[in-house]
Image (cartoon, rainbow, N blue to C red; front, side, top):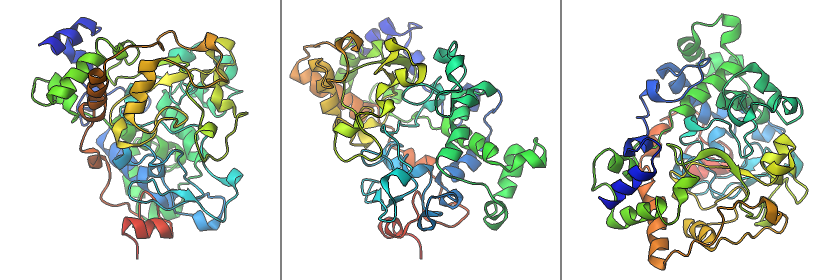
Length: 418
């Protein structure tokens, strides 16, 4: 009763229903781009293409052709995140048990890798993200209204001029960035042409079988990645036994003393807002490729806008299924959720490169008790964990390849291939 009362007191609508996510098949209630309406056919095509290693046809070396997919860096078993600190697509080999065994191929130089200078964000509940990536550079709406002068300067953001939503804009760019192609072999050799026909039959044939339509299908699929089976979701819908007593106490801490809800305020427990928390960057936190102290991605939102007041600020991410992976923040600087909770409780920045004037005022000592810290961690790790993310993974892809990776080491570790 205390928890429900507290949630209602901070909810923007005054009810717990505000935080209820739609069912993953309830397309009419999932936010979407009017220029790319969600349909079952698009979602099914996007599900296969997201894991289809057979479209990885523009790799830097022949050895990596057909060996990686979007799922290489967004593994369902790891909460649609990499199993290690830095995701590797083209130029990666191996998988391990949960994606943690991914490493660089010996035939690749570091600068040839498809690898990013920040830890990839989870794509769960991404339908509720108005401007995507850590610095929010994609999408013409939301906080990017008024940034038009930057769209021809920042990487890939000239596509914002098309007026698409952030996810569609980013994924058009992503097909090129991640070196993927839609060819006649993909369409006819593997058999994807009929799936494109079913998903995009309203388009003329010359526009139907392209990287753009492939990216639209992937976008529709990503919008349907909803964590509606998490215990907290069942609790909000009326099953008061869905969470343990400890998880309920942790939720109460989340929505009261810890004030997590003030920043993680949207239905997906994220926000389209940007803050500097003073955590370490990826180059500081262990082995990291293609990044350094000079990497402009360390500037967060400021890299995109060029504004001094935006420097070192990063988007507030959604919180569901974060416990499935072992790395947190844009720089993978923490390796357990308890470390994350402790960082916010102590409220002391750790990155000397971030001026104190930029640090969010919300980062201050919380003085939570040990029990509150343990309870909050339990809520984040278990109460917000959808246990059935494998429902979003296909049983097979049309190429017949292993997925999410198809290199020899991954085939052995995944137990697939010839």
